[in-house]
Length: 431
Image (cartoon, rainbow, N blue to C red; front, side, top):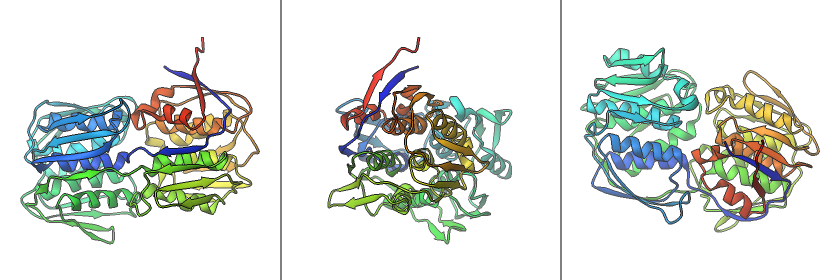
């Protein structure tokens, strides 16, 4: 386990934001279902994206990659296989919830049996929404007391699929990839208010770019005609707002900085970081090719995390160093991420001198002038590790972060970028 000593420092300059992990998952899956060869540029082969690519290879897709510098964005070509077939009966999703929930429906195209395995918290993350659909559609499945490994055998049929909207949009996306390929028309009916709509928008956009039609009826029902065909794509992945958020907060708490490769008209739900930060008093400046922030004293506010749960750890850092009180609400789903992110965020930031009260569905944060440093842990969660890095720049003493390698899940070159902007991170032997 890697421990880094993070010295108090000021981050400034400009940084190219890594490509959106959410869009990357969707692009490679659409390409895998298309006839012909697709080309995808500006792709980071993080652990999550590698898990999805390996899973697609297990289902009969051919993948080749070109990466100039390991861990940094590269290009990929992919020869699709719209019928899919079992090349390997076991798909290891590692710790990627997107990989697991997106590929489960697609694996039923093969008829099975296919076994899904995973690591870390993914083994315990809920799949009840799929289990209920398996029972309704006669798909055989076996689990270990509801947890991974999961083995499935059988095929879904066209028809009506009911899903709750307050569990995870990943189940909706998984079905949206599958249903256009079935022999008849289907409907996905959302039985509760849909959270994380932005992720569903990304899915529909990716499908449309691949020639697939989905009719969105006010996010309560999605009508998907059957017998459709995916077409090969040639695309470049745009920058990731959930990753840009760390640098935007760092620039606001420090001396300002500039983010490159950000799409001002992005459909990413995490684009809400801009609205939230503006409400807290941040100073954001758009230019033709970049998004910049200036140093600012921010103030507390109420943050509804229902549509942007991944932003909570870094927003908690900003709130901890803002004047007044911040309340983060509708964040209960964070308890079943790579870690219990509400508990992890409160626990580790409090070790640094923050004043955070953990609530059942959120956090209550009283701002302080500065943090004092100390020893913290990533909880094997990439977003907790990166949040601690941002917090370190406003500490009076060093921060010792164990489990710093967790960033490999989504942003393998994070520490390189951190140091490029002026951060000071040294490996440290805690023994």
